Amino acid sequence: MAKEKLKVDLTPLIRKLEIIARKNVKTTVLGNYKSVFRGFGLDFSDYRAYSKDDDASKIDWKASARTNELLVKEYEEERNLNVFFLVDVSSNMIFGSADKLKNEYSAELVASLLYMVLHTGDKVGFCLFNDKPLSKTNPSKNRNTFYIFAKEIVNPNNHGGNFDFIKAVGFIESFLPKNSVVMIVSDFLGLKEKWLDYLKTALSMFDIILLIVRDQRDYVLPEDSFNITLSDPKSDRQIIIDPKKIKEKYETYVLKQTEHFKELLNTTEADYVELRTDKPFIEPITDLFRKRRTKWR
Image 1 (cartoon, rainbow, N blue to C red):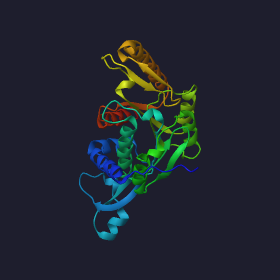
Image 2: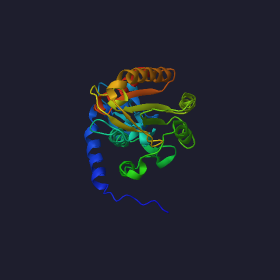
Image 3: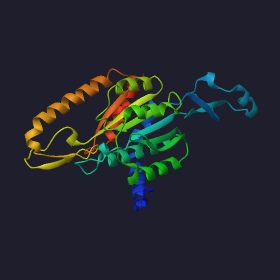
């Protein structure tokens, strides 16, 4: 029996994502992105009149002779980067205690960055992934990529299941050009054994950035005493707990787990930034770009 599509009007959600993306692509973010992720060459743009501040060696004597005016060549940076977003749309991301679920926050984050990349002239593509690719576009300069992403990310049929980081990394290795910039968006919880080995292999091929999206409840539990029902999205098992009774053990475990995760990441060349769904992402993303600029000087 074929799976029936949900009857949801996606148009208002797509429009909302576009408005958010336009608002978030500020000059400071765009400038930091362009200065960090530079193109691989320069293209001739036009001639302009020589000024006293120019280096005399830049004068094009042949063109100057034709016009009887001193001219210098102007060049534009050749924006030929491939930027690819690998987005976790598993059940783990359908969770939130703030205004936005993790997958909603991720949708706005990627839409904004994708919109920004397109406006620099770079190629951009994406894949929504759980334990298999659900929707994919290859890197291109096609402005429609933004609307394709917006349509796919707000489609309820594209959310759920388990996230398999190892399969996701293997997938991008199978078709992405080497030296592509890959931004992986996930909460990176419940990673399988040997995930680090696969990340290191991918890092020999790509420039990888991990955008870690977490909810406040991924770190701390409420202070109050009350009963809540927790469901395991992978097995549908349920358990009733009083968060106050397990708060200390939970937070100690989470802190240890988080520190270990970061220690492992620090043994690689991958850049990463930790984002919280209860806090805007513009400032941490801008800081990430600034740190990368300093790192690669």
